[in-house]
Length: 404
View 1 (cartoon, rainbow, N blue to C red):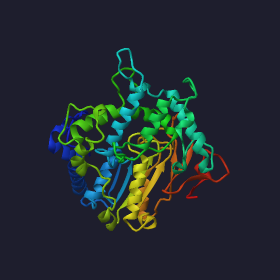
View 2: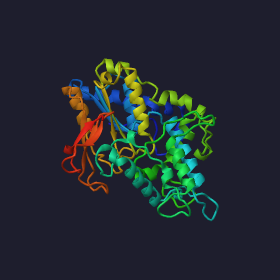
View 3: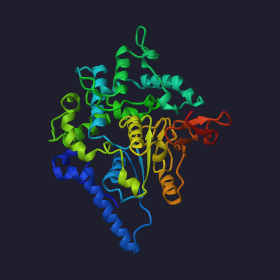
């Protein structure tokens, strides 16, 4: 069963219809679920024993929406990269990053800045190698992955050119742009508008460029931040919609207020209690790639920390909700990561057998350019995968989940 979420077609003009906006926020998904449940019950003569929701990105937002608005619908929810503040903070960050990188991008013959050239592939590879050199060893294994992101203290200034730009350094403008974007957007008073980003070697992966910089060699950017997010902002996230608006015009003092009305019905970051979902025995798994270029893994960490504070602490919360970071993974998949794992199997085991996952086995996808054949455990936050000092670095069996 599927839904068009209140609109048809790949463009955002549906946002001009207020009913379609509410359908896209939650109504269409709720209606789809109830119809599906009714069809199942009629065909089989009874309701299903258990019901599960799995999704990533917008699907992750929908999973959170069900846990909050309709807590009795699903017994287990396993979501990845949940777009918890997409119609507010994350889109503000998209505008912040776009404007920052455009400001340092070289201009073409027509005087137009070419966003994709703000940082070349070799520049991003240089940054990725330096992050790895700085932060890789914190997990006990020199394996090209930063398995302990909270321990990473990377400073891009170490890459700044002493003189002329070459392949082994970055310009002062490039360094400043990285510092500015990874710290996250702020208004002119210094108020934080969205969390920053974790330093991760996945910055050099294609999925990171796709969102931040794109590949267009013209003055018309094709980065997802300037196409997908810009259209959503103008037609749906602003109240009222402003079709003529461009993300390059975003004002960080005035425009966030234009996003608040729709954010109140669309975003899911505010409710960090999930009281009813917890009371009826629901189980929640959240996965997030630490190199996600659109929804920061730091947002999921912040949400989970708030969830634990409102539910009796980490130990009590871990009996029904857990967070798993995926080192190196871009948005939902890709990057120098073991990004193939079975969240559905984990949530089924938890709901039906009471087996709360402390670690979930993950592997690099077949045909990946990164670490083919490698396996790693994904560890329940705040633990991380630490090499035990014996055996192959390619085998998850030689890693333990540790908090030390």
